[in-house]
Length: 382
Image (cartoon, rainbow, N blue to C red; front, side):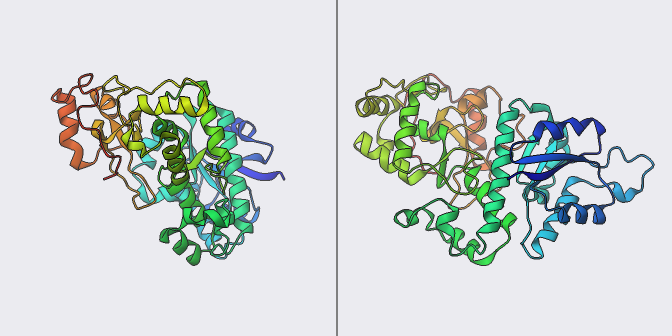
């Protein structure tokens, strides 16, 4: 099924992006903004499969009516309100803007963040195929959510589970939402923001490998993913094509069986050795960027360098989203020491860990000395 989609920008130069973003599932048309109310209704009544919109739609107004001068968040809110009137029509809205605009205008506007399902930075469209895959996954997910309303008795289908694995979504937050909304973009926001885009009851590929204690760049790691998929650990529910994710509980149970004990009681070196016996492949153990050692009991992945770390060698990120379904992100000491976190407006260190940050930056806490002796961490999120 091919769906009509719209790319909205006040810059004529962005018209070629409509063809770039078009996929087997979405055919994009370029549109310039018009008077808000009539324009929003026109877009909504066209029943698009998706809308991709630049954040600043008010930079090239010139002598035109000021009614055409508004931001993407204003248009998105109007479209969300129209969808909320009945919920029978809904579609993903994606922000497509320059990184400096996102940093200067969009990021501070916290109330606008939930209006968009995804953000594409104009300055960093390096992997167009990956972005197109994500756009298709978003469009497909909305189609499924429209078909599956109401949600309270469709949760197993939505999350790609059978009755034997219903316990994986036995969380009040999930069931309460399913019982109180039939609007696709509300349920989509929950799945995308709290489950797909964040580690928690689901974990990403790099976290799986960190828990396995193996080097993420080893081609042999596919053996692990293939086996986990055979065990049903891979997430196959709505929006599964957006990002590869795995059911944490299923992964942990598998690892405990492979290792012969609780995962956090084994170092990366020991985990890799146990997996060699299991799979008959000589896995390379992961090394800590901080201690340069494989004798670490990795629990997390650094949110900046994406290398494995542990609570004792990292600080917590101050989170806007929190709750039992979400794992708090962490930044490793190595990235702090090299000031890699200073330019990330989306990652701010929690105030409680500021003294630790200061100590690392001043050299009071130093790397390549710990080797597993500066605390091992228990893997718990604070």
